[in-house]
Length: 228
Image 1 (cartoon, rainbow, N blue to C red):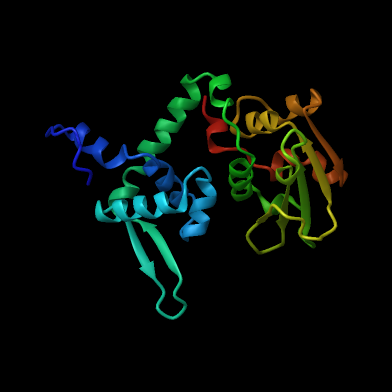
Image 2 (cartoon, rainbow, N blue to C red):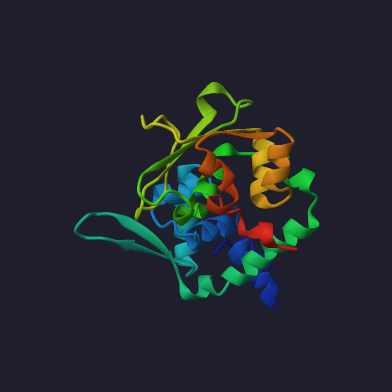
């Protein structure tokens, strides 16, 4: 634990000493969402350097919030949240809902990140609402971004996790989604609706008419979008 804490016996102060180091709660949230390998976790916190993330995970391990598990046969390393960390999950989720209700949408949408948006969108895709007999490929384009950051592909195969690619996978695309990054972020996180952004021309869909019509079913929005 950091030596420059609050130096108080107050339980709130002690909780802050565990959770205040920058990125701690975001790392926990990413692991609660299913990421366990180093590079997976990094994709959920793209603004964090690998060096800092390694240091923070070691600190969290020392504090009893995560465990580092190595597969001896493959050498693969996974990071798992502990029981005491999992007690924090409903508290951290409630903090997110509080922010969603009380922090102005314009403030939240000042800092946009297509990589983070697409990574979070990927894990919420509902493959059961897509054609069950074949692979579905959806290309998202954000025209205002630099050319090498504009395109993302979601690849949905029956019975397998959804893949996210930032380089062209070479598959035929079923649905093209062109969007302003702010509009897509706003609709996904719940500050606006998909239909309002589509009607306003800020999101457009071209390709498979069935997939376009059912976007509200397969593109499940953030859990915070349901918050009052």
